[in-house]
Length: 383
Image (tube, rainbow, N blue to C red; front, side, top):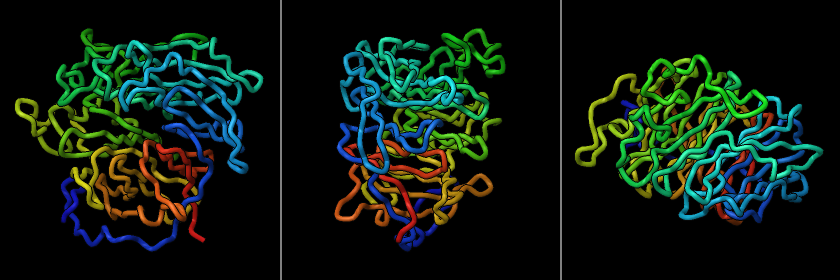
């Protein structure tokens, strides 16, 4: 079997298990469909874990003790596997303001980007401010990622609205917020402003919040904490999963190709696929659908590792949700190289990781693995 790395095909011998230099340790367990983990800038002694039904819990990583921080289950839709509370971002000045933002789907199937605030160690759910709200076409492909970029702006990853093959052609339509990466300024006291250097401000037919487009379902993106580059795990249709990458500078106005392109090829469905669009950004890595060690059905994007584990430094870590494998590669001269399968060595003793909806990163660059069945793990050096 061969594996596609952009235009480069490498021998399957590279897919052999690597020596056990890394491992995982369980940080906490017992969550209800966890989908996100992170660490606020104000402390290293607390993890925040988001449950898909609309609950955020604080966890002491040493004792595993959990405390409910926020519960908005009554306003979060959980129809289907892809709705719910999906993402969180701490404001760059969180240690001073206590502000953070969440991305969730409400009962009317709108994506909501909401601002909350920690005051006196508590969060008042009634003080929610909905910063941005827009309708989803269907109950899947909601995206759900958001984070602050190296420029201090808030970036939001939106899927194409759902169904199959982008039937409403949202991803290439600059008049829709769907199938896009948005960029907004939330540094003011209320609401948001459109940054004056957003790429489509002069296009009267475009939504000014758009930063990049041509996205199908960005399930977990991340900014490289060292360079500010953006990595996107974009879930495919019926054939290919992909990892896309852009420097922050080159991301302004970038077109990642969907629905014309799935992976590196014209989308196979009739009357959908086409030639590469203008400003197209090709994925740096694609893999086929299947149950093999180098295959899967739904990519989960991860992080360019900048933590203390030497084996992984400078490598992009990612996974597949349905075929729960964990991989990494290096990016050299714009191409994925030295692909490794870490699945076997990153299994907990006496068990296995079942489904991976997200990775997380702490203040020191340590990477966490979220298992949708309940546990959260940290990647460590093997003993």
